[in-house]
Length: 276
Image (cartoon, rainbow, N blue to C red):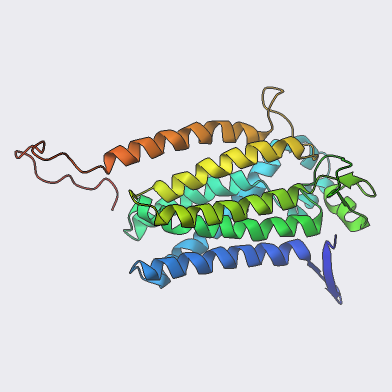
C-alpha cells in the first residue's frame, strides 16, 4: 500500500502513524460523548483516557518486543524497527486496562459502568487503526490465491516490517478492521436489549474480540513465535480471555439480579459498592 504518506523535507509522515492517531482520537471522541450522555464530566474522562492511550502505546510495543525478543535484540538496526512497528493489540489492551483501573479509582468512577462506556470506542478505534496496518503492510497475511488477495509492492513496507512483496496475501488487516466494525455494531445493539447490567458491554467486547482474533490469527503470515508450539501469542491470550469473559458475564448478571421478594435479610443494610 502506501507506508509513507508524504515527505516534508527531512520529515517523513507515515500512514500508520496518522491512522493510529486517528484511531485513538476516534475512540476518545466516542468515549467522551457517551460519558457526557451518561451525565459524567467529559473533561474528567478525557484526562483519564489520555493516560490510558499512553499506556496502550507502551503496552503494545512492550508485548511485541517480548514475543519477538531475539529479532529486536539481534542488532541496533533491528531494534530501531520497533519504533516503526505497530505493536501487539493485546499488549496495549492489557496495559490500558491496568492504567484505566488506577485512573478510575483516582477519579472515583465506577469500574464496570465506565468500562461499558469505553468499549464501543475501543472497537471503533480498533477498526480505524487496522487500516493503518494495511497502509503500512504490517500484520500481513499468509500467501493465498483467493480473489480478494492483496499484493504489496512498496519496498518501504518490506524494509520497515518485512512485508512480502509481489505475492498475493490474505488481507488480514481488513479482516481485523471488519471485526472491529462488527463488534462495534454488536455492542450498540446489545445495549438496546433488556436485562442490561454493569459490565455486560465490556465483557461482551472481550468475548467477541477473543473469538474473532483467534480465528483471524490462522490467516496471519508474520512470524511472531508460538506458545506451546501450537498457538500464536494472541491466540493463547484469546483462549484465556474468551472463557474468562463468559464467566464474568455470568457472574455479573447474577450479582446485578434483583433479590426475590421476601428474601432480603433485614439485619443487614445495603451492601457497600466494591468499586465506586
